[in-house]
Image (cartoon, rainbow, N blue to C red; front, side, top):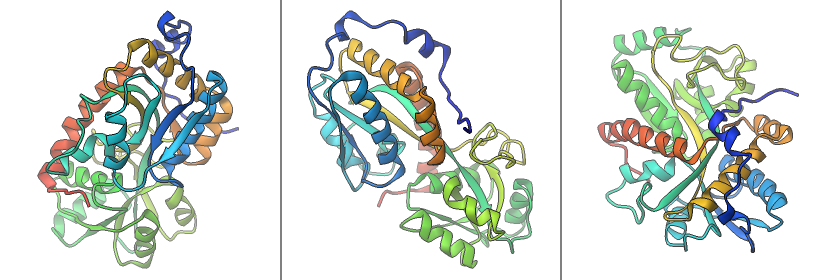
Length: 320
């Protein structure tokens, strides 16, 4: 069995042995976990976590899908009673959408109590084989030599593939033109056809086309080499020091949920993530499991909102 990366801190491992008295009777009824539309990576991860928690709790954790933007999933959780019976499972759109709109019906810090990061997945920078570049450094040099002549595809405005490209533009001091699509698959079709030249794709979608030579991989967007893309170097190591961009999912409760309930949810969620069969399922879906403490998730949100919020504002990214 291939091993996926599990980023569980020593603090989390120590915490698993202790359970607050105030959470011993939680839950006494089914728990709702609201997430994104059915069928995507967020939904997949939510259902894996929900199934594991249902076993532990002896109460069903029901996944409720809400299509559309992050607002449709986040607002009902923000307005729910802070008792641990309504949870939110979502990705970075939750805390980055407020930077892309004039206003949102929730505050990602005030209205949600962090429980745990659950998984991450780097993108892979791929180019059409006709592009005369072999490394990230080559691509930066070409973009500087041809300002505004290159373009990159994404799976949509504000998507991780879009923000990865804007972060690349900002850090490299270049201007590669963004071409948004409605989905990762549609963007890849045009990339393979040569209609666009560059893309920060999901690893699972790009891998088959890399093997056939239809796409050339330059780097993964994680700081460390990824088991999802063996042999592919990082952006940091091949031309752009400090670059990091990844899709992540995390679990939240409404703000002001009792600390004892948050601790119980955190402990049990991280136990689920440590199960070998769960790690394997995530890996096969192109995801790396990653458990944290609530405090670590809160710190990550603060960092990402500061770092990517500036990129979003500077690039004028607006949500659809």
